Structure formats: C-alpha cells, structure tokens
Length: 68
Image (cartoon, rainbow, N blue to C red):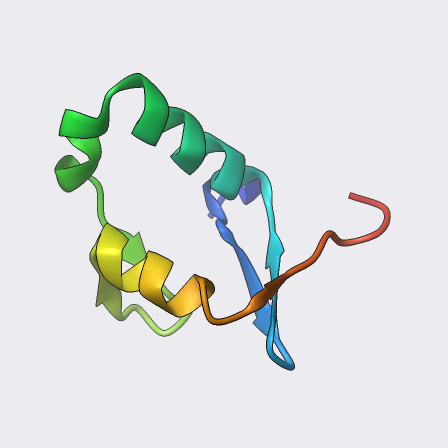
C-alpha cells in the first residue's frame, strides 16, 4: 500500500491523519457523488462506508504526527 492511500492511524483515543486523509477530503469536495465508488479498509481488511469512518473518527482527537 502507498502512504498516499493511508487515511491515518488511531492510537490511544487520537487520530493521526496521513496523506490519504487529505486526498479523501479533496475527493469529497471535488466530486462528492463519486465517493460511493471507493472502498475504505482498515489494517485487518474490514470495510467501512464513508459515514462509518467519519462516525468513528469524530469520537477521536485529531492530531498531527511530527516529522510528516
């Protein structure tokens, strides 16, 4: 997997966005109708809808990773 495809990492109640998070936001804003064409997977291969992902992330503190 390329790092540009990784949305981020969850750790200890925090979410650390990665390059894929920026790409996802761009896709949502530029062509929201195409979002249903994408598959979101976690590291174990479990699939999520965009709504399920956002519901999970909104409960976490958003933080940035130093050095990225």
